[in-house]
Image (cartoon, rainbow, N blue to C red; front, side, top):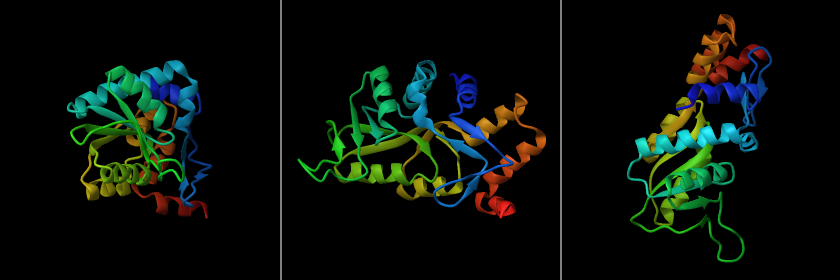
Length: 211
């Protein structure tokens, strides 16, 4: 697994940006000391290949019965395509909603009720978009056995949301893991580390200090 190399490359290429003193504002209004843009990974072939290699390994380990790889539109599609190719498995992808023309499909690609499907997204924050994809796939008769992603913050909301639908999720990288490596390499000070950890413990309360 290329965990350390991937995290290092994500930071170096500013795909993941850490700024504990000048936080970013998410669409929800939450203030955060970290900003991620995993859509940029497809522009870095070496990094992208390491990510997809590790995702393929992770999925075979966590979901050995998988027979179809699914991508969550749009960010999960390119990673699902490479992972499916590496595993020699067919691929599908799931739109946020059905098309409003043609056959009105929400899922593209072929699968049967006997297939075991793993869906891939790039980032899991609360899990909302990928859980919607899971439900759409299940409505179409798919057997979704799990979800994977490049990164997750491991916020309580995500854990609770996946538990509600009884679907396991296995991320390649997590916020605590990234934070641990950044501290070990000296890229963040002890003070910055505590600020970053405190955000993860209670994100909404953490942001109040900047109001």
